[in-house]
Length: 416
Length: 139
Image (tube, each protein chain N blue to C red):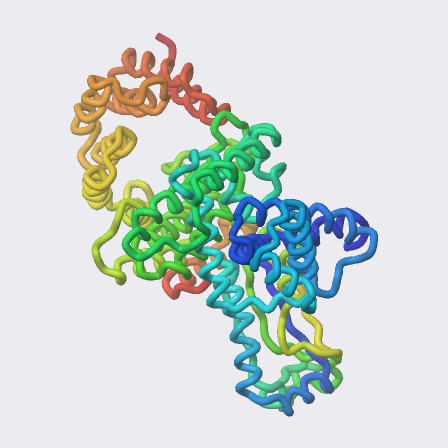
């Protein structure tokens, strides 16, 4: 492992581990989150120039923090904002290049960082970009690749987010206990969104971008450690671990997607299933019942412990989808309930649920509804209607691999 | 991606830890382990009793020879391991650099742990081991 490429990889590895600590420490000391993020990025950019030339410093995290602090001091000088925060920074910058993170302080800081990155004043896209950048330590390029958007778009989202937070005077702090549960909602949503983006490329050809999904799992683990008294945090971690457990079986040797019923369950990652079930048990232990993530995790667990599709406890899955429909009603949940009902009680019992969805104009422009309806009609032997539904589904489906699955189902119906 | 950090030390380095205060060692290792946990990367870890309390089975002759204590000609004794779930080999290296209680004569080897789907799925032994892991919560 030598050469500039190796050094760059080493810089990025340090950054992945330390960015949250560095940004949050600076944000606390300067009282200015946007400035903290700016100077941290400048320190990273400088490391990418300096380290390949002069070698990696003995204490890379200390080097980054000190460099960022000096940049912050310069910024204060430029603004003539020479108050006590400046004095404190200047004092810290003169200290040894050894960040002595106080573990309790750092944990609070990282949590504050997650809350501010997912603050409700921000758009969902900005929350995601900012979280990946400051909590995950990903570069704008990496985020852009993950979300299939230009790098400039990611940078614009982050810049906008920092301006919005500054304009709204959002303080850098862990929300008080009475606001915490409500403020946790967007944090969990963002982690979940990063995971889903990592596990299915919307409109892309690669079905699984495991690096994003892995980062989401890591963040869920961090949250479970930092907010252990919230069942939904453990529920989310359980859901992500149990879903990620199936990744290795979701693509065949040619990179084609494999449906759950056809997956080789021997390829599911048992260690991820063990971790997911442990997290789900933890969610139950906290008390207050399971939330929407916990119920989805329980559904994933039911699949994970089943030896085959036929031997799955579909009755339990139906009950869980009914519970999920009460906690977080949505057409997609209803559609999944229909699939579970069709497995538990046959396609005739499930078709009315799907027809009701069609009736109400649910999921317009999505291929999901015609896909499921086509499947049910196929099983009921109503071939001509099934063909029309599946043709609709093919037309609406944005993912190339999924389209090929639908094409195969159409071909299996035979000619008209 | 899972990586194993394999900690080794030569006889002198390992012997020199006898002088270290146990509470001090516990504190240093505990802080490091806490960092791994709060960063969401720790999967598993174990440390071992001193090598002289073990036995060695040597296959140089038939039947193999069993002797007490550390392997006579070993250059480095195995002391313990971590398994971390990280984004890259470089990240595993960065964590290894931060291990406490290190000194000259101590080394950490870093090796990737293959995932479950890199094994032949139709092998009956692989299947039986999988069933055992599932039943016992073995990672």
